[in-house]
Image 1: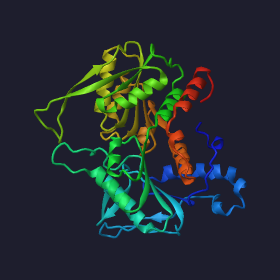
Image 2: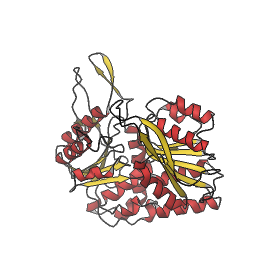
Image 3: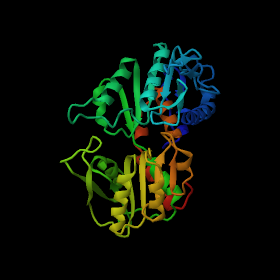
Image 4: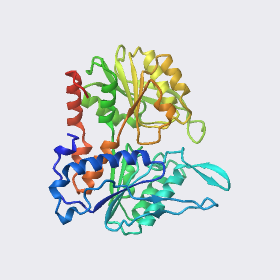
Length: 394
């Protein structure tokens, strides 16, 4: 179970815990810190006089760090307190374009490149004094450029190798575009975590009349790349699974890729069934809406789209329109990346909070515990399904 109190943390901590949420990731970092403060306050009496647990219970695990900029736009990482001997967890949201800085009087929005540079600056400021450095990067930097199809750079592999060379021990990410990118750093800690449990919990909390069986519900992958997610979701919920594949025009290239001609469906009938479309990210949203429209044409009942990262790069208008027309009934994404106030205000949007899960991962790693039990949510999913069927509060 995902209750911290029920887990036995047998090992002594690797070092005194320190969390550094970088610029743009403060809100998530504060929530994670609150969970850790609460849990450790509850269990600190057990280790009160143990020297190995020195600094175990604190009012705050956040470390004072900043990245000021010179007038030219260049920057430097500064730590406002000592980190010697600490087990440090750096949290970075490379997708937070809402953070700005001044460059010769002009306002610049921070790109993923800027956030990654800030991460390296803070690692450099730590300067090898920490006991261990762990990076929690929910959206893996450059993960969409994970393989080479022609004369191309392999940016994600280079970034991972650079972090490891700088002394990073563990990299924690969520729903990496392709987990095989970890082959670039085979001797270092790399975990890609799926938020399937949080999606299921979010859906069950907000939709009260779901019939979760293969006759009334179906899991759909919007493309061939995300089939594993849909297969897993279908298996744990006992549903049928279907998938779309993108038929592309390989005779031309538009914006660096072959344009999609049509989405073709493979799977049994969706008529009269509620459908969950599951994917790793919603970028512009064109694919999700095309897939949902195609499912509606095949007489699907309600359609819910779940994606780990809601980028919504072209705004929310097309989703508003799809909701009004009854094509999409709900969209679920996590708070792992920046969410606009506009997105949070939408009646069809379901926010899945990941802060408790991240706090649990940090707590377990700090105790050098095994993550395998936390990363496999089968038992928790079955538990929450049982509660739903019994009409209990989730």
